[in-house]
Image (cartoon, rainbow over all chains, first blue to last red; front, side):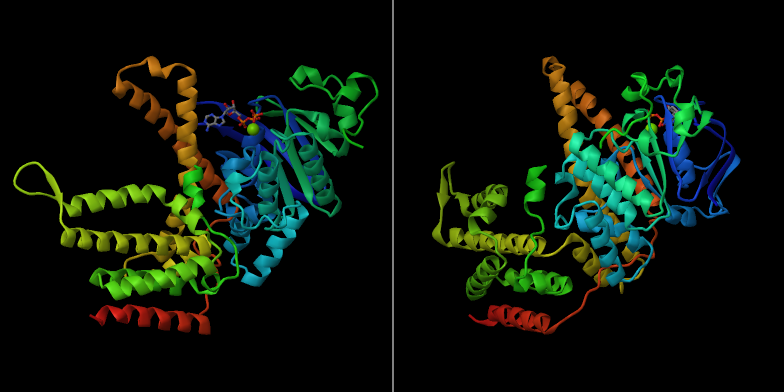
Length: 249
Length: 246
Ligand SMILES: Nc1ncnc2c1ncn2[C@@H]1O[C@H](COP(=O)(O)OP(=O)(O)OP(=O)(O)O)[C@@H](O)[C@H]1O
Ligand SMILES: [Mg+2]
């Protein structure tokens, strides 16, 4: 069943940059998709449309059959977004406040909020950090906090913009692990990246963007050949002729 | 950045931690006003109560003094202005009775600051905010929820601005801004990028809040009065009433 439908979406910024150029994509429930593209290819802009942070001048975006433009609030509830820069996503003064921010906006009961916060913090291994100030966390912890903040809203779709930037090896493994678990639990996952190495082995679908257009869309094994021509580095295992291999065991 | 966060919330289970934030704010206001009488009995009693609270809340006096050390410079200034008089020529003189008065003023100010630190150290910002909403509710023409959001944003944003300011200053020093002698140019070079970055961060923060469904109809922290609050108010009234003693 499809959960997100985008059809003939265009986006032009005020300075004339054509960031999205006739994008048509459908995402199915429970699918794990990687959207890859060079810097400036329009990945972040696309995610912002799905989340109702940007609106189209022409073309439509629908989440669960409802137009995002018509009801952005409903779309944001279904689709959680982890921003490219975790710092700019932190809203609360303490870790607890930050994770509780979303559920509070949904006007849930305090007891239910506490339950969700505990759950989300446990899911990213941040239990016990409730009273810490987000700005004192390390880069990897901040990213995990950002994920917890989105998880606490219980969205059906999780979009992550470059989730592995600025993370060291153990932190990358952890975030990767969480993403895989979420997918196993039935979440729809959309990840953007310009570095396929880490995630591609777990994805079911690979979408390539170039200058605001979708140029390839299919199962990773089919799309990955000759991917250099789009400005994306193929994973090492592919370069060595071994096909797609998991980045960690 | 560290300076700002030093006087922050410390989790705990002391009496002050368990009081309702509204009680704490009312006590802070009430005792500060009572201090205006500058009654010695009250000041002594209040100081004793505060020291007990500081101890109970698990703060160390030495840490406390260290955290408000800049305030002591201010107190010295206040004392100097109040106590030192220039009689006749240009020789400063210190008169005992005036000095005594000045000392009381400083004492009172110090007490208010210590109470403020106690409030901050034992109350989550979210609770302080919820209490503020409660107090602002009966006042007409004030949108209390908006006021609370604004307060929260200031708390959230100040460290970011200071941090970015420090970063810009460092980045410019690394590129030799010190060789520019004109302070006006240096100021411009500093403030323009700072403002730009602060605006960009504000934009991103707004997007992040929107992405998580921000709206005015939110769940606020639950506040409830208990017998402890009654007790604390009682102690506060008793302490304040000593201003009537000679
Ligand atoms: N607010 C804006 N105003 C003008 N142009 C913008 C704005 N935001 C993005 N752009 C431009 O739109 C294009 C697409 O940007 P976008 O951020 O979507 O790229 P991206 O694929 O996410 O890149 P990256 O890998 O660097 O994150 C870029 O050319 C960028 O310069
Ligand atoms: Mg991007």
